[in-house]
Length: 502
Image 1 (spheres, helix red, strand yellow):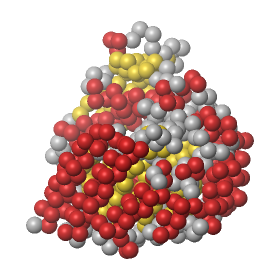
Image 2: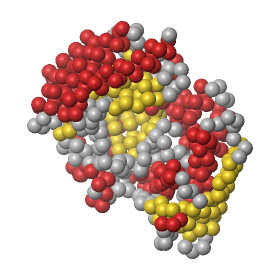
Image 3: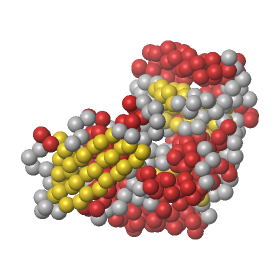
Image 4: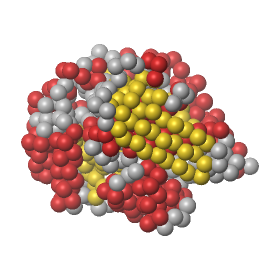
């Protein structure tokens, strides 16, 4: 779908225009007035800004069908140029979405939101003491979010505050993400740092040396400055790709280096690939009192697993789940993905039926996203996925199933190019929620990323401003520079946690 835009010369509008168009059309092409002769839709904008911002849009298609919308809002006093443009961009998004909804007849339940963390908006209102009816009304009016999605947001926020009652008071603590960038194979939909581990033992050894160094240095800083750890999460890749002996030494390093490990609220290890789980590795997890793991089927259809590059069997997923349960793992998460290639309602219903036989403590239901750098996106024609209506029915099926089985939604995030403009939702049985997932999604606390490809988010304890910092994604670059990256993170921590206290 080619859309010609008139009246918005500023390039800063181009990305939001494209993101909103992608909510409606699988392939959208946004062109400016002087670039298009064959556009199927023309949308003309008029903008004005003085004491208020006013934006109108008129849409016309090749058949002469017209739709229009307008938005006006009084501007606050003493706004910076950046703040004024943000208000203008919001107004443009509002009228743009409105005319596209009118023309297509498709209602976008998340309104103009294309960002990852919608629940942050509701948390912000609650922190500022807004009455809930007023907060909900503002979400509807400002962002065009439907009642259905606002209700989901409220359920999740309520659950998060029940699980972490001091959620708004954890700015002076940190959580830790430890990234291990190796997997048995790379899945077709994946863009995480994940390198096939076979034949890479030299890279693994070098990487683990750097990882131990980072853990020691960050641990020293935390101890010296009396900063507590809320949660630790081992992700990747697949952290159980390394050997049991390597895992043992890594967790020993954690216990030696980090402060007060016995009182960390939660330690999670992703064992997402069932083909990496062994009795010896489960013994190591038990030895270090780690009982929250992920075992991720993604699908219970063997043909699907083969198509997406997961080299384990359905039977192996079930077998490893029972092995972990019998060896004392009492908080197991599982992931399912809606909209995998070749799957429809029948296949997803089968996955839910198989999940019911296991009843993991938590279940994350992802909607397939065509991530820019994934194999699936590079070869889109090769991977046939369900249409929007069927994807929405699969999500409805998941919602109904979780209610019937006693699971509650407790975190939510969205992605660019997600099928059906839906969401990913984490569900859990009572008191089995992942605290780390809440912390990473709501961005109310600093999360220090350690390891290859690990991203840190440093949250200013006073202003809430976020500083991003990412370690290199490939093991060689990481191995060459981990000391420098560790020091850069410590410098940021000093600035945030020490200077603010002086």
